[in-house]
Structures are given as structure tokens and as C-alpha cells.
Length: 200
Image: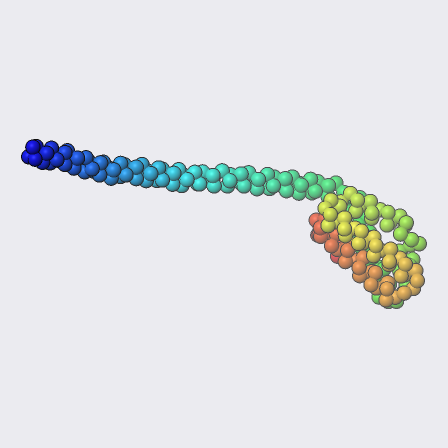
């Protein structure tokens, strides 16, 4: 009996012992398989991102190139339109040329303290025909905000020049003259008329 019990115990032990060993050998195998799958997935994701980034960058660069090309086309169109306006504005350029000659003579008279001569050259008021002609030229040839700002500056300084000369105030007349001439020069630069008008 004891021998039988011992045999059963031994058999049971032998039967039980291999089971944990079998499970132990299977678990690492599953872990290795799972680890390989995770590793492959990570590599695939990284590869996908590395391939997608250059494509996205290429798309963005293409968009930037198209936007730049459109801006270049628009700028060229504006320049051509502006050149067309200038070419067709001989009368307005004539008004501006007369303005330059007139201001030059007014400046010389003020420099010589001859405000009576300066007043005679300017005329009775800013409603003089030559002032209206000049503003008509400004209106046609001014397109940008900078140009329009300088037109306002010129007219404001010109009004001060009329007033100072009329009051026979030499110092203020000189200041107003310089301010008027400066605004006109800036406007000519913005309007693209440098080299087309004499006496600057």
C-alpha cells in the first residue's frame, strides 16, 4: 500500500512537474512574438512619417512657389499699367514741369528777400489755375497711399507758402518753400517720374 501511494505520488509529481516547464517555455515565445510585432509596427510608423514629411514639404513649397509667381505677375501687371498711365499723361507732366519752374523762381525770389516778386509768381491764392492743374495731375498719377500722403503734404505746405509770402514773412516763407519742394520731390520719386521731369 505504501509502495502504491509512493508510486502514485511519484507519478503525480512526474505528471505535474512538466506542466509548469511547458508553460514557462511558451510565455517567453509569446513575448518575443509580441515584441517583434510591436517593433515592426514602430518601424513601419517611422518609415511612413519619414516618407510623408518630404511629400508635405514639397506640397508646401509648391504652394509657396505658386503664391510667389502670382505676386510677381500682379506686380508686373501693375508696373505695366502704371507705365501706360505715365506715357499717356503728357499734359499732366507738362503741368508738373511748369510747377517745378515756378517753384524754382519763387525760391530764388525768397532767397533774395523779394517777397513781392514771389507773391506775383504764386498768384492771388491757392485757387490759381496753375494750382488746379497741378492737382489734376496729382489726381491722375497718384496711385499708392504714399503718393497721396505726399500730395496732401505738398498742398498743406503750399498753402503755408502763399500765406507767409502774403504776410511778407521771409523766414516762414523759406520754411514753407523747403517743405513744399521736399514733398514734391518725394511724390515724384514714388510716382516713378524721376528722370522724366527737368529741374529737380
